[in-house]
Image (cartoon, rainbow, N blue to C red; front, side, top):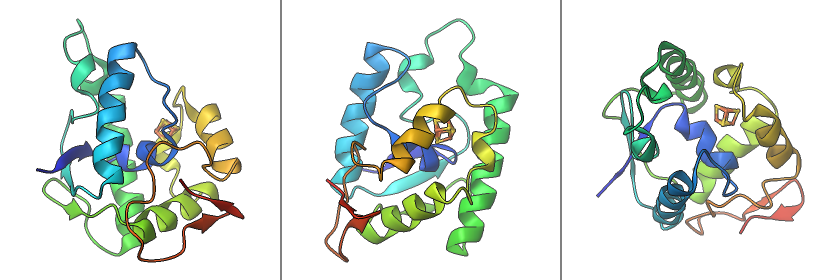
Length: 155
Ligand code: SF4
Protein backbone atom coordinates (compact mmCIF):
# COMPACT_ATOMS: atom_id res chain seq x y z
CA UNK A 1 0.00 0.00 0.00
CA UNK A 2 1.01 3.59 -0.53
CA UNK A 3 -0.40 6.82 0.83
CA UNK A 4 -1.58 8.79 -2.18
CA UNK A 5 -0.74 12.46 -1.77
CA UNK A 6 -1.08 15.41 -4.10
CA UNK A 7 2.05 17.54 -4.14
CA UNK A 8 0.98 20.36 -1.82
CA UNK A 9 0.03 17.85 0.84
CA UNK A 10 3.75 17.12 1.17
CA UNK A 11 3.76 20.50 2.94
CA UNK A 12 0.45 20.20 4.76
CA UNK A 13 1.47 16.88 6.31
CA UNK A 14 4.35 18.64 8.06
CA UNK A 15 2.10 20.88 10.13
CA UNK A 16 -0.99 18.72 10.60
CA UNK A 17 -2.01 18.98 14.27
CA UNK A 18 -5.44 17.36 14.21
CA UNK A 19 -7.39 20.29 12.81
CA UNK A 20 -9.33 20.27 9.54
CA UNK A 21 -12.49 20.99 7.64
CA UNK A 22 -14.79 18.50 9.37
CA UNK A 23 -14.76 15.62 11.87
CA UNK A 24 -14.76 13.13 8.99
CA UNK A 25 -11.85 14.94 7.37
CA UNK A 26 -9.87 14.87 10.63
CA UNK A 27 -10.67 11.20 11.30
CA UNK A 28 -9.41 10.27 7.85
CA UNK A 29 -6.32 12.48 8.24
CA UNK A 30 -5.53 10.83 11.59
CA UNK A 31 -5.49 7.42 9.90
CA UNK A 32 -3.22 8.76 7.17
CA UNK A 33 -0.93 10.38 9.74
CA UNK A 34 -0.58 7.03 11.48
CA UNK A 35 0.30 5.30 8.22
CA UNK A 36 2.90 7.95 7.38
CA UNK A 37 4.29 7.79 10.90
CA UNK A 38 4.74 4.06 10.39
CA UNK A 39 6.83 4.79 7.32
CA UNK A 40 4.33 3.83 4.62
CA UNK A 41 5.51 5.03 1.25
CA UNK A 42 4.01 8.13 -0.36
CA UNK A 43 2.90 8.10 -3.99
CA UNK A 44 2.40 11.50 -5.56
CA UNK A 45 -0.83 11.81 -7.53
CA UNK A 46 -2.30 14.47 -9.75
CA UNK A 47 -5.52 15.84 -8.30
CA UNK A 48 -7.50 14.67 -5.27
CA UNK A 49 -5.72 12.24 -2.95
CA UNK A 50 -6.30 10.19 0.17
CA UNK A 51 -6.50 13.33 2.34
CA UNK A 52 -9.09 14.92 0.04
CA UNK A 53 -11.31 11.83 -0.01
CA UNK A 54 -13.86 12.89 2.67
CA UNK A 55 -14.41 16.23 0.90
CA UNK A 56 -15.16 14.85 -2.53
CA UNK A 57 -18.82 14.09 -1.88
CA UNK A 58 -19.58 17.82 -1.53
CA UNK A 59 -21.31 19.77 -4.28
CA UNK A 60 -18.23 21.62 -5.55
CA UNK A 61 -15.20 20.28 -3.68
CA UNK A 62 -12.41 22.83 -3.63
CA UNK A 63 -9.98 19.92 -4.15
CA UNK A 64 -10.80 20.12 -7.87
CA UNK A 65 -10.33 23.86 -8.23
CA UNK A 66 -7.72 25.63 -10.30
CA UNK A 67 -6.26 27.31 -7.21
CA UNK A 68 -5.52 23.97 -5.59
CA UNK A 69 -3.98 22.62 -8.77
CA UNK A 70 -1.71 25.67 -8.87
CA UNK A 71 -0.85 25.01 -5.22
CA UNK A 72 0.22 21.51 -6.23
CA UNK A 73 2.34 22.88 -9.05
CA UNK A 74 4.14 25.29 -6.75
CA UNK A 75 4.72 22.66 -4.09
CA UNK A 76 6.01 20.12 -6.60
CA UNK A 77 8.43 22.68 -7.98
CA UNK A 78 9.71 23.72 -4.54
CA UNK A 79 10.01 20.25 -3.04
CA UNK A 80 11.49 18.88 -6.25
CA UNK A 81 14.15 21.58 -6.23
CA UNK A 82 14.88 20.95 -2.57
CA UNK A 83 15.24 17.20 -3.01
CA UNK A 84 16.89 17.47 -6.43
CA UNK A 85 14.38 15.11 -8.00
CA UNK A 86 11.20 15.43 -10.01
CA UNK A 87 8.02 15.49 -7.95
CA UNK A 88 5.22 14.49 -10.27
CA UNK A 89 2.47 11.92 -10.60
CA UNK A 90 3.93 8.50 -9.77
CA UNK A 91 6.88 9.81 -7.73
CA UNK A 92 7.41 7.74 -4.60
CA UNK A 93 8.90 9.00 -1.36
CA UNK A 94 9.56 7.26 1.94
CA UNK A 95 8.58 9.53 4.87
CA UNK A 96 11.75 8.85 6.84
CA UNK A 97 12.91 10.86 9.82
CA UNK A 98 15.56 12.52 7.72
CA UNK A 99 13.11 13.52 4.97
CA UNK A 100 10.59 14.97 7.42
CA UNK A 101 13.30 16.82 9.30
CA UNK A 102 14.68 18.27 6.08
CA UNK A 103 11.25 19.35 4.87
CA UNK A 104 10.26 20.77 8.26
CA UNK A 105 13.45 22.76 8.65
CA UNK A 106 13.12 24.22 5.17
CA UNK A 107 9.40 24.91 5.64
CA UNK A 108 10.12 26.74 8.90
CA UNK A 109 12.66 28.87 7.07
CA UNK A 110 9.96 29.75 4.53
CA UNK A 111 11.85 28.39 1.55
CA UNK A 112 9.26 25.91 0.25
CA UNK A 113 6.12 27.89 1.03
CA UNK A 114 5.16 29.48 -2.27
CA UNK A 115 2.29 27.00 -2.43
CA UNK A 116 0.91 28.34 0.85
CA UNK A 117 0.10 31.76 -0.60
CA UNK A 118 -3.53 32.59 0.16
CA UNK A 119 -4.20 29.44 2.18
CA UNK A 120 -6.69 29.87 5.00
CA UNK A 121 -4.58 27.65 7.26
CA UNK A 122 -1.38 29.61 6.79
CA UNK A 123 -1.48 31.26 10.22
CA UNK A 124 -1.85 27.91 11.94
CA UNK A 125 0.99 26.43 9.91
CA UNK A 126 3.19 29.42 10.76
CA UNK A 127 2.56 28.79 14.44
CA UNK A 128 3.15 25.04 14.24
CA UNK A 129 6.48 25.59 12.47
CA UNK A 130 7.51 28.39 14.83
CA UNK A 131 6.80 26.07 17.78
CA UNK A 132 9.14 23.44 16.38
CA UNK A 133 6.31 21.12 15.23
CA UNK A 134 5.92 19.98 18.82
CA UNK A 135 2.24 19.08 18.32
CA UNK A 136 2.52 17.77 14.77
CA UNK A 137 0.67 14.49 14.36
CA UNK A 138 3.01 12.85 11.87
CA UNK A 139 5.85 11.52 13.93
CA UNK A 140 9.34 10.87 12.79
CA UNK A 141 8.90 7.42 11.36
CA UNK A 142 12.40 6.05 11.28
CA UNK A 143 15.41 6.17 13.53
CA UNK A 144 17.86 7.07 10.81
CA UNK A 145 19.01 10.22 12.61
CA UNK A 146 18.35 12.18 15.77
CA UNK A 147 14.92 13.79 15.63
CA UNK A 148 15.57 17.13 17.26
CA UNK A 149 14.34 20.31 15.66
CA UNK A 150 14.53 23.79 17.08
CA UNK A 151 15.70 22.24 20.33
CA UNK A 152 12.57 20.15 20.79
CA UNK A 153 12.12 16.42 20.37
CA UNK A 154 9.75 15.35 17.63
CA UNK A 155 7.19 12.81 18.73
S1 SF4 B 1 -0.46 26.96 4.72
FE1 SF4 B 1 -2.02 25.70 3.70
S2 SF4 B 1 -0.97 24.82 1.89
FE2 SF4 B 1 0.62 25.55 3.32
S3 SF4 B 1 1.13 23.77 4.56
FE3 SF4 B 1 -0.43 24.92 5.68
S4 SF4 B 1 -2.38 23.97 5.09
FE4 SF4 B 1 -0.84 23.33 3.56
